[in-house]
Length: 388
Image (tube, rainbow, N blue to C red):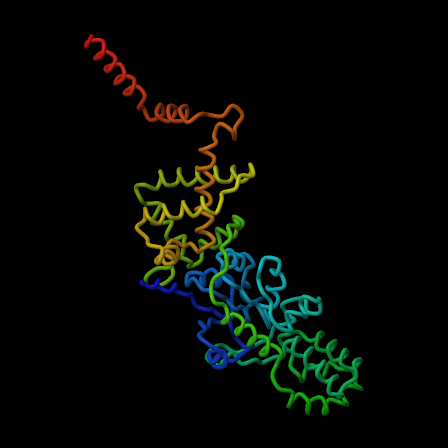
């Protein structure tokens, strides 16, 4: 009995910086580690067809932050997306309704409204050559330590709240424990030696605990989720084209560069016309409330792959080289299926709609085929009369 080939499983990609040392992260399992995420990084990661993405650390302020649209694109592609500890915790709370999964205590604080913006999780840190070493203290760390100080009996709840207020008043770029101490009321500064002794043995930071759990959850993912066909905004689609999100043999390629080559192709005018027709008709079909079934979409996919001589085993590779993922490929198949549906029911979707016969005749008129057909019919009729 022949065994079926095992389906290839994509990598788990983690965006990680100062929240957890890279060596410790690698010890958890087979992770593809990338630096803190910035805008476009999630789109670029989709070229690898990951089964899961763990967003822990991300940049902000100095560089554009990871965009909600690209995280939605990953979710639409069927990728499991987890967030924790830092930027990941914020984005997971914002996109919970769309399927992004938040992990850990910082995420719980965000959901409860106790942590509200990027500055609450932010810190200054070194680059990868120095292991992303932190220079300042994020506010969520102060919050976690304040709770621990109360639990240990070092501070009263009111004093812990004062500690948190003082830390909140210090900008994240200069928020060190020394700066927090200097911002405290005089009565609490006198007790700082007790606080400092506790902090020296307080153990692991909350962001590290959350990051580790997030990576474990992502690694436990066994396969992709179900792809969705949601359509991103026009602005998001244009931005994605500007990113290296097409899988080239040597390196990812920008969609704008691919378009420059395609525009010079001799078939470009015909491709453009057919592409606009398909997009317009599919959009109209959706506006009418028409829906393609899963079977109809799958049938389009089979015909498409067969026409391009692509096996199902190479499907993900073909999509990545085409600048697609499972979600955007499914959307394209759905477009084609909807256009077919419109054609099949042309007489019903328009008042006094066209028949197939009318459509064929009018298109033949436009390309000049009708006079020739008339002549052929006329010759045949003459031949038949001659036979009599």
